[in-house]
View 1 (cartoon, rainbow, N blue to C red):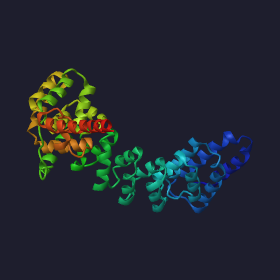
View 2 (tube, rainbow, N blue to C red):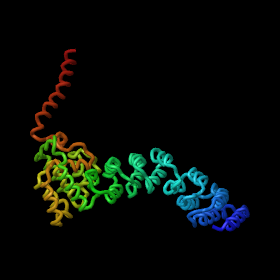
View 3 (tube, rainbow, N blue to C red):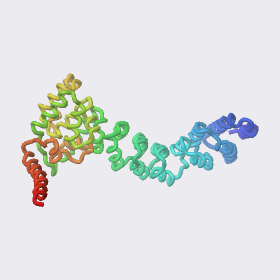
View 4 (tube, rainbow, N blue to C red):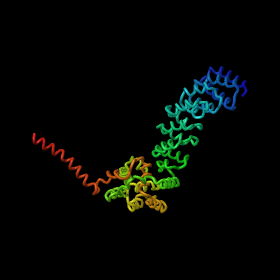
Length: 371
């Protein structure tokens, strides 16, 4: 890099005091472009650039400063004092430094990853030189932008623990889920991402669940839906009342109503079929619901046949998959009691509860009368 060019620019900068607002951003960009042209610089060149840019950097606008930071961050011998001043300004310029500057110390990266601003931590999450410790700290952050940046960084070493944390959050974040599915080999930790998975990925997840035999030890199968509850959910579906249908499904699955709506809105229908199997809905009722209320499935013999074939899946397996998708702790057994409140088996306990509730006012009336 010819030193006389810097000498001329320095003289030009000194003569530009009459129009600082017009000339200073241009001078800063030009000097930075000249500095970034070569991968290595002599001590004199670094000193001269630091002297010139140092006079211009404090008054630079945000856009100019971000451009300068982007170029300096990729130079191995950029002046450390200028980088520190850029980071102190914050904003997009500081983000560019944390994204690519190799001079940022590990201790500072760790601090930003653990408790730094969201935009700076997102930049750290996209770096190519992360280690497992920093990845662990970033995966534990609650901000969605950080999680997405980390998942999209194919060079970030995700441990099983970090992947599990991100996958659990991906069940409600399709962008995060898709980024994880695109970068990771499918494992059982990816089950929460089922709704965002492609058909081939869903088939792989089902195979993994079957091979692992999820939930076959120490779990009761639970009761099937009684006729009244089956009729209610079938009626809501057949009358095209999707909101009511989703609410009934959410109650049976003990999950968030938004998650139930995502299951109902899933075009392939296999997530809904898994939910039907998990709650104990008979196959013939599921077939009627698909044939009448879900025309996309009904008009495709492939989709309809695939959903009906899913009924070969053990209910324990389907329940565990749906639990992973919804975040529910347990679907089978006692959790069906709320939805089957009108079944004959539950009539006696309800009558006893009603009798106990009615006896208290009667005792109060007797006491008042005696008084």
